[in-house]
Image 1 (cartoon, helix red, strand yellow):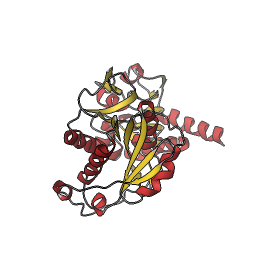
Image 2 (cartoon, rainbow, N blue to C red):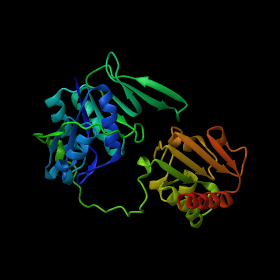
Image 3 (spheres, rainbow, N blue to C red):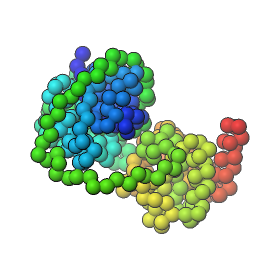
Image 4 (cartoon, helix red, strand yellow):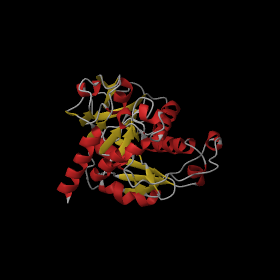
Length: 320
């Protein structure tokens, strides 16, 4: 069976959920071969094997930490030359898309970004994408070279499928460009204890209707009761009520959780572009004519400062 390269997103050996989703998709079109780079790469093997990786190619060198994405592109190119895969799958993060784009140029191939599904086709893998703020669904395939495909988080289930997971060292020769941009400092992001926004299974977002930074405590309380991430509309972010890193929308982050709860958000096209592919959407808004209600699976017409606290208490009661 043809091999499928899967780029591993990990932190010191802890594999992040989008990579495990990629392994599920990779098994649909071939045998997954994982590529783990940097500190802790070898420690990823157990988790990757448990989720279907038949081989794990590892490489560690100072370049992966000391410089930006080019060393990782060099390594993926080396893995591509060593395996001749049917496709290369990369998580659809900001860094992942840059790596994928550079790799596609290097190997003379086409690229598909932000896929939400993947299946085998007679002429190569076929990817499903949501286009124009999820108003259209497209099915595409790369017609030249090895398809390089980035996949949005939460696009596939994490399915254990034990495989050999044989660890092999990946020889990498770094290009001149690899050391062109050096990382001079890192500042750890403050942990909120909540899931990463783009990876969360549940997202609770607040908008203009929250009416103040101090009132986001109501949104956070609901999110914490559900084990959810907190999002915000552009209006809330522009007003300074919540950090830009939590913005959901066309100029923010794109999310596709199992459940999305929009509180005090009107549903402008800019916001819809970032959350319309969510599996189940619930809206709470006192304006019965708000555009968000045209999109939702469940809508509550009411004051969020009455509805959200009651919902939070009900969830706590049921969990207790």
